[in-house]
Length: 247
Image 1 (cartoon, rainbow, N blue to C red):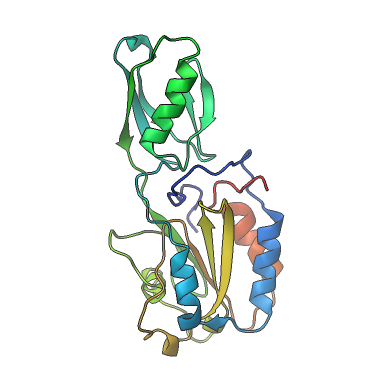
Image 2 (tube, rainbow, N blue to C red; image 1 turned 90 degrees about the horizontal axis):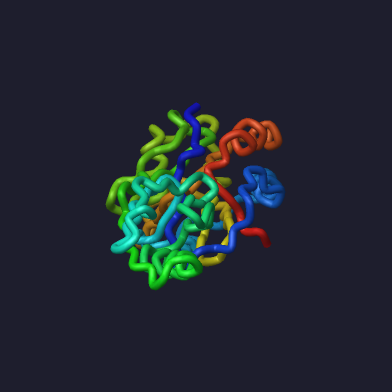
């Protein structure tokens, strides 16, 4: 099973107030276990408007895996190349140190850095450019033929198409009516999850349910009897979310 630790988080319109990285959120684990063992999820068509409304459509914001170039017009000693946004959403700047940047736009980060450098430089004239953008990925796991982390194409893909990236479901064991979608919503500063009745007869809805960067799609076995083992095997070791809100 490939590592999912380099999955990127969705880009939001503002920077969440994240605390230090927490790779084992207790509330998420409890939610996953409960979702897998209870009644079937709501029909795909009923949940699609709510889930699509949570999509983040702002690709200009920073995320883990991006790298930056920083240029000063008058003080070249502070120039930096390939400043990496690390897995905990931080970047390191000369004389300032580490700071949380994930979720910020380049103009927002520029304003923050001007304020920071203004403490010891007179009217700092700086520009920031994106040197390298991290790839978009989703994770598909559970009763699929090739579970793993997959690059997202440029065009939006639906839930059935996401299952197709993993080779489709294992028909004699997959419990599609208990499909679980877990999504990081940066505007809300939290993870959300939905249990979906994703049986194939639900796939022909008028409006598709679209996946987004950093989503985790889990199709449980039939019946699900080892949720704790599944949590330990996948979530504890390979959580694709780099951090959670401090709240």
